Amino acid sequence: MSGRAGSEGADVLAERRTRLADSLRAGWRASASVSEAFQAVPRHVFVCGEPAELAYEDTAIVIKSDAGGLPVSASTRPALMAIMLDQLGLAPGQRVLEIGTGSGYNAALIAQIVGGSGSVVTMDIEPDLVDRARASLAEAGFDNVAVVCGDGAAGVPSYAPYDRIIVTAGAWDLAPRWLAQLGAGGRIVVPLSVRGIQLAVAFEHAGNHWVGRRACRCHFIRMTGPSAGPEVIVPLGPQPGLYALAADGAGAGGRSPR
Image: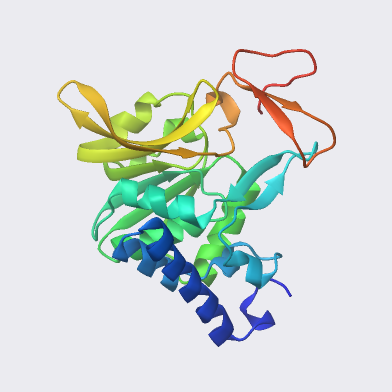
């Protein structure tokens, strides 16, 4: 069965969405607005080519790999998406920037929460993923999401300032342009690498510094391009499969992320 709605009846897919939303509310204490967004947005549209039943499992789905088999982009596990969206503290009418479009599903969830009075801008460094996300967002009825291709560390200043910024790729620092594009009273959620461990941290401005308010363990594919961190990926055999992450520079047989 493909990921398009025609492979299963609309009622069956709606039932799967309901079960996913209920599990996020009960098992992960997702807020009402976040769980309702998962109920409303059809994930199978964004992971086309995968079995429709997989779209509504609480699992990450790789949507692009490199020539060596290492994942380049994935649709994040829904439970982690729900946690980070609650960290973000979304509300109707907000202006939101997402770094790391991927499939476009998370941008659709954000757009569902902020509503027609809000706005969502999402960007990715992979041109083919940008094109795919635009098509999927349009198919799902989210024509108001702006999808931009570029290096995530630059942000999208033409739409700034933002009330909220969410980064959905592993980062090793807070990019200065993200902070510059965040408006007064804003919040940014970033998966930060801390000695090889990733923590999704919500930061808010406090006086002349930034304060982490909430944090949770996570695992995201690292940022690529000019803003990539110093981590080095060492494949441990054929890919996709196991690999090691070296945080202190290249070792024998290792390679820096693209």
